[in-house]
Image (cartoon, rainbow, N blue to C red; front, side):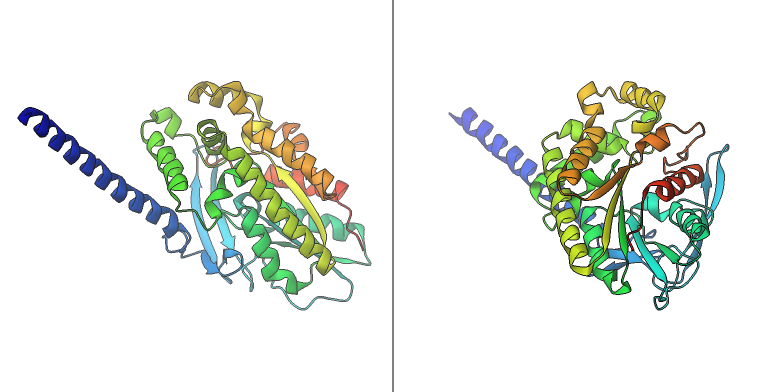
Length: 351
């Protein structure tokens, strides 16, 4: 009896310690998630600021130089914003009588990992439009912001609808916008969310050096996330539809032409890279299709809602040159050139 009581006491102490560790771990992880949205990180404070509608936007009138890359691909990028924080060299002024204004948003791929702002697909498209029409002045504004997902795209339009855009383009990055959608909700520090994020972070710590060398956030992390939590795919798609419906309604109210483009990750456009990732991380065939499956589901839904959309996978997959940076797997200048040309050939501004 005495021995049994001692065992029970030890078990209770152990359970108490486990509970205490779990509580501490939860609050540490929850704080880590929440601190991102406070925009206080060293990389955030120089470039981003909190916003009540879009959650966060670029700081206006800045110029930052970043040196990065691989030995084969070295680059100094100029992160420059105008008077409203857009990735444009020219300031936004009063809309001209003959101006057709296009507001474009997206995540860091749209924001652009480029040497100069004019290299973005938005500015390349703008140049082609203006060269083809002497009567209309096309002003295509790059409103891409790193980390953006569906909730931001709605808030961004709410914030800048006063600029009276004639067209609103959302460049959805299908490589991580779905995975990020639940994190940007108000319940981001729920036990379920904290557990899933903590599990993902812990899993990374045990990866080999070869796995850790791969840039996770541009397509791979989403694939691995949905492999571990397949039920989250339905939630992510539901959130995407929810915000896109609100955007559609707001565009109709403001007489704005809505266009959605879908930008794939390197996994979807490069079979050799896809095979390498699948083998390296031992991902089963079904899980490997998660990004493409969600993209196709969203495209089918966009068609039912009569929302104009374009899949950018075909033109990027057909490219004979590299279209993603080796260092971080963002689209490179060649991809921007291809997308700019594709938009010129396919997207018809409605006057």
